[in-house]
Length: 254
Ligand SMILES: C[S@@+](CC[C@H](N)C(=O)[O-])C[C@H]1O[C@@H](n2cnc3c(N)ncnc32)[C@H](O)[C@@H]1O
Image 1 (tube, rainbow, N blue to C red):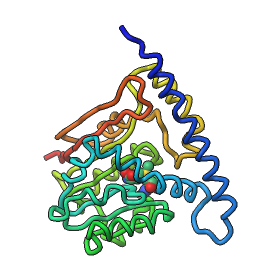
Image 2 (tube, rainbow, N blue to C red):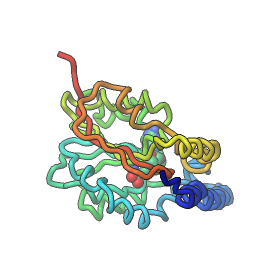
Image 3 (spheres, rainbow, N blue to C red):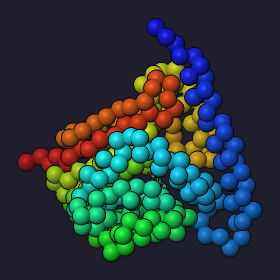
Image 4 (cartoon, rainbow, N blue to C red):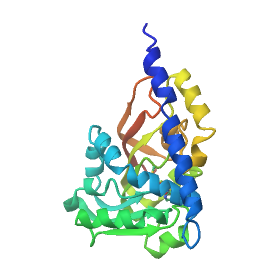
């Protein structure tokens, strides 16, 4: 049995560099805090994430993410669109309307630019609030049983109270509606999981609340009643961000 020590070491130390960059982002957000809207943490995260869009997009194109995004149809709630990295991947002819529910207003300009680039100005509504803010959602008609589809791409790692949020998303779906997700998660390899746990002591503070060691697949499956349409896990044993992804259909008891 090969131990892959070199691969493990490289991957286990990899968070160090973005960690240092995060400190610089926070320092810059602190220095420019006067007159700025949004917390230092939110602005630092939005700055970093927006500059990383080309690298993220290139990597994501090599995965099953584009196919999952293009499977969304009807009235869609996109949870945490951030700078709108996935907006160009929707199939416009399958979409009636998309509500992008995003808690960080620092992404507003970047998100709007991608919505326009995708030709979705008349179909995409950005709603800047937390997914837990039921009153604001209701003002936009986002209520129980109103969505054909909910999408979540790289959000469940950082969302607060993920079990409750999944239960909320389930309620927002129509019976038979789908949750489509693509998330990074805890590694099944226990050594890598220990390293993920170590980095997760500091990582959420500097990286938008993101946990590397979250059991996202279990949380999604156990928090509501789903029929599995598609479920995938990918990533090497030493990967710090293996992926869990899929399509789950809302089941309603007769
Ligand atoms: C890592 S980014 C992912 C952005 C985008 N989905 C993508 O695939 O690149 C996570 C996003 O989720 C948003 N988010 C976190 N908690 C949220 C909440 N409670 N309600 C709405 N958005 C939230 C963050 O502000 C951030 O924009």
